[in-house]
Length: 425
Image 1 (cartoon, rainbow, N blue to C red):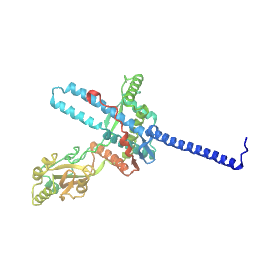
Image 2: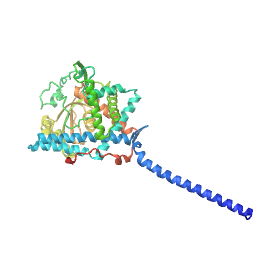
Image 3: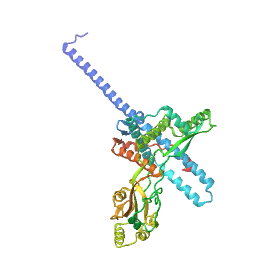
């Protein structure tokens, strides 16, 4: 066996170390590549359900929760569509007008099923729910599991104590009659004669869309003892069947259903807390207007009034407001927030008898005259509208000013199941 020189041994050692380094480097590279691939697979297959579609402060809405809620809403819409379609077949056959009405309803439901339309609606609702729960937490408002269970029982019409809630209207002061009219007011109102009561307290003025936020009604349930024929076993059977049906049709878990009920209870409790001390009496104004389509027509109307034209005659001739043109443009009494802002800002600052300059709003151009200013008690419908508006204004403000971040990726994650049956496609 030949004797190896020291030089030869050193060279062999270096080559061995190089091969080891090369092997280690190759292993490291392979591990990195596998890690990247694995991370990508995890991101694509495991993480998406947990990725947020929106962040609201420290809270977030996961893709999983968003998709489950969309599927639930789709399921409701699909069932509505099928039910309406069956009703149309059974009730509207041979009646073109009836069929047209049903078809309009079906078209509306189908439009609501469009993924982006429904996804955006659901996402906004879920953001509002988070905002409500955040405020509830700040106010130490809680919802227990027992309250959730009770709400579910009531949804099914099951009352363990054998009592049914009967809605009773909240007691409100009788709206006062119009105060004794001054000579000036009498002169301003010749068209309707001498009103002895509020011109139109309960009707919504035709120039203002009525707000419809989710809110607590101003009715207080009173309990009347009534024997129940709906047993606990029947309720539990119905509940189980419903939950299983929802899960089968929409993959909406029972836990999510209960969480949705909980969110609704938080909304009701927060609504009560935020509107508990709103005064029933509000500053109100009694006004009339002439509504026209453009500024030129408004200026012409104003010029004719300044020249002694009869207000009621001009309202009948020019006004495009069908709800008031034939009664002298009279809008009755209203408080701030009932009319659109542009109208409010002018009407509540005019003196009695004063006529405004042309006022532009989304409805056209107004000439406004104020007939009275008073602090008056609201009717029940007006008070309910005030409660709803107060809560919705707060919610809208939170939505705009809150720390809300929506990720564009939600658009790609909107479920398209469940779908309409094949015969309705």
